[in-house]
Image 1 (cartoon, each protein chain N blue to C red):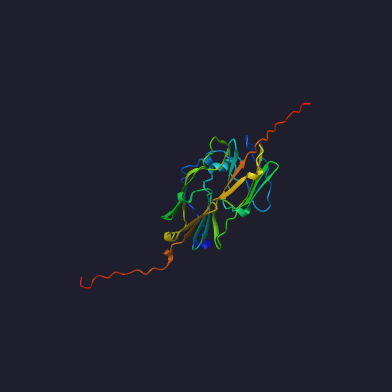
Image 2 (cartoon, helix red, strand yellow):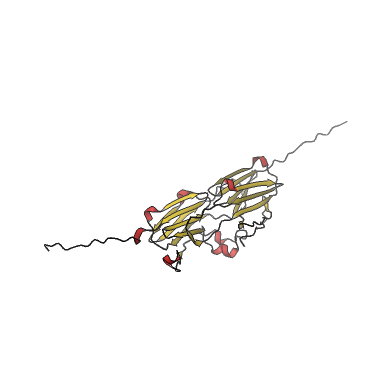
Amino acid sequence: MNGLWGPALAWPTTWENELRRLFDLPLPTLFGTARARTAPWPPLNVWVHEHGLVVHVLLPGVDADSLDVTVQEQVLRLSGERKQPELPEGATVHMSERPYGKFVRSLRLPFPIATDAVKASYTGGVLRIELPRHEQDKPRRIKINTQGEGA
Amino acid sequence: MANQGRTEMATTGGAQAVTAERSEARPVLAPAVDVYETSDNLYIYADLPGVSDKDLELTFDEGVLTIEASQQIETPQGFELARAEFQPVDFQRSFRLREPVDESKIDARLKDGVLTLVLPKAKPSARRITVKTE
């Protein structure tokens, strides 16, 4: 498996977290404060196979309509918004640890993707994205143009 | 760090922390929560992604509310993990409620990996004592 793309399974990533309110706040009960400041949100796991990728994203409490998943030029881009629940009238806030706001994450993928076959589902606060590998490795017949004989 | 239970921080008014226990099998994580309070209710929102209702247990015992849950995220067969920013965990967190609540009316909902709890405060039972005269 490793031989396919070798040890250079590097994942050049470009984080464009537009809003990282959570990580600007100290969160002593969640992770360490230092880690919380640097960890991108939402957290994701990437599973790889020679035929494609599966990405799992922990995204509790997000309106699925706000989620946007695109694949372009071997970059997976994920964006959406998590809204705060409506506060009951006259409520006092005792704890506020859950992150809210807009988020964007981009991930460079190790191979081209068959973008038409990408599937995404959202259940139980987990977003699952299936990214089949593009069939580019298949041998392709190249048509040879011939000059018209009369030319 | 992630594999030890956390002692929760105390808060004002509504909820105060109790200790969480260790789990041998999986890391135990305290879920992120929001806690609101009104004059009538206490509201707790907890992030529990990858948890379904059958893997969630809520207990209320002597003023201590405990959330226990097990995250279930399937491993794609034949795939290798190439980037890991989270690992499956057990969630656990307890809250000591400083005010009595009406246990029979606690409302719990789980939707899209978020647990919403509404705990109605117990109405103080004011009783008038009549004084008998001889």
